[in-house]
Amino acid sequence: MTSVGIDAIEIWTGNLKLDLPNTFAPEKGEDPEKYTKGLGLNASSFPDSYEDIVTMGANAAYRLMERKGLGPEDIGRIDVATESSFDKSKPISTYIAGCLEQVFDGDFHHANKGERKFACIAGTQCLDDAYNWIKADRSRGRAALVIATDTALYARDDPGEATQGAGAVAMLIDEDPNVVELSNEQGYGSADETDFLKPQQQFPSVDGKRSMQVYLARMREALEDYESVAGASHPDDFAYVPFHTPFPGMVRKAGLLAYRHMIRNTPIEEELAEEIGRQPRREEYDDETAYEDAVREHMDALKETDAYRTWYAETIEPTLTISREVGNWYTGSVHVARVSALKHALENDLDLAGSTLGVGSYGSGAEAEVHAEVVADGWREEIESITIDDQLDARRSITFEEYESIHDAHNHDKDVDTTELTTPSAEFVFDGWGRMGERKYRFVE
Ligand code: CAA
Image (cartoon, rainbow, N blue to C red; front, side, top):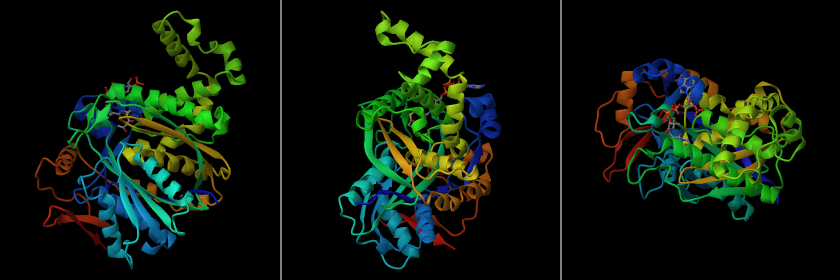
């Protein structure tokens, strides 16, 4: 069978923008550099009062289908990944299909629709489902539409409030893809963890510092598991390594951990030994604390070396550009990181076809997955079509007071009247409630 992977991508950002260092930090009495340097964020995207996970997902999917000249008959399944669902039974994919049927001829009655939940990793799991469906020869020549859509809001005054965001990524999964071919080698690291969860509640309960440790621990397991099928990985194997990006500072830590792991027992480690010594080995230490202190000290030295800084600047930093401006999109974040990387290659005229990306996804609760992707010949044209820069520029900046009222407008426990801050154009909007409590939508020309 031919290769299977991502054939086209579209991104839709929430229409509002909260400036973190200049608007949010002063209200919180915090140093703006905590955001720009510490977390690595300049702004968060927010949904206006008429936007939600359905409108953002449908808008991204509509744009993708229009651009590719597709109709409902070309799509055999619609899988939505979200951890912001407002309905415990009816999947968001049915709402999105209903939206799309307003603007396309035909319908999606033939399409299998579902919703995946496993925190932020569900988008990658939907890619897997689509890949497996096509590889199993069940697709009848149709493509799959995977949509990762989230409104990543935290309770007011939760430390996570600094990392909020909202947006959707739509991906078309098909044979002979134009963007990337997915490899069938994967690694997993998964454990029953309580780092971030929403037990019957809209906003998450988060143990922030622990969530960062769990992210790193599961990612390390996933990388080792990946290597057990794909062989040892080396920093030069990958043109870019897009990670799940709750905020860029998290990826700074993941990148360093991955680099330390990949260079162990390689000539790079030997070359660096003269400068910073070899990596500590557990068997060389009598107790765990001494070993951990030595690892920490070594990592501090490693991150200052030219070898690491160059690798990071070329392989990781380019994956973070969009995230810095939009915050966390939960299920969409790792897919935004991939687009960021490919955009960087486009803007720097790099010849990327045939290069490999190493993709590290993560979902709290918790699971990490690592796989490789090979960039396909058509990547350039596809990435040129993505309008994310224009969308980011078109967002309306909000004041702190507007932020407070928008947060309230999206809080399911509050019933507030909020006026729209922007005027929707050529997009789906929330249009009130139906008789069974369903949310209704309409397309605005
Ligand atoms: N100048 C430069 N840097 C500064 C600074 C300043 N003035 N002030 C603070 N910093 C740095 C800190 O040193 C820290 O960096 P390091 O971790 O490298 O030391 C960083 O800025 C953040 O500062 P704090 O740790 O003081 O921030 P905080 O206590 O407010 O919490 C957080 C940060 C735990 C990430 C919190 O935002 C949070 O709970 N976020 C939600 C959970 C999350 O995103 N977890 C990530 C892993 S889980 C996951 O990935 C799933 C998911 O999507 C949620």
